[in-house]
Image 1: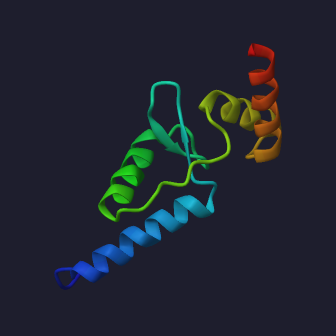
Image 2: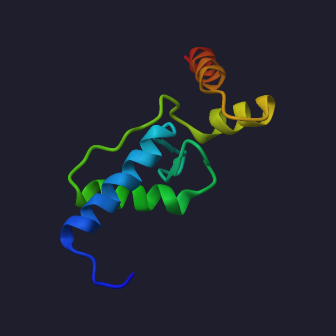
Image 3: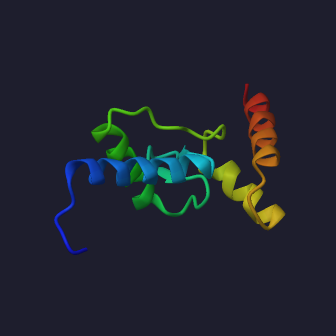
Length: 99
């Protein structure tokens, strides 16, 4: 970069970062309270930076409809790729079984 970024440029960059994560399903919360992007549930540090950016911009995080990484990772393994509906349905069934 040839110049020091302005406050407005930094804010725009953070907003674009949030929009990118949100467009790919938002974030998920694991059993330890750590966050990760729904598009890559193993990338916890990216989820934590996302949460920091939300706090700095006073923006509510977008949580994916899945509540746990276990259901999400299971769906990824079984389908070979992201399958939000299958993972969500599985998690709902597991919750019903525990109730």
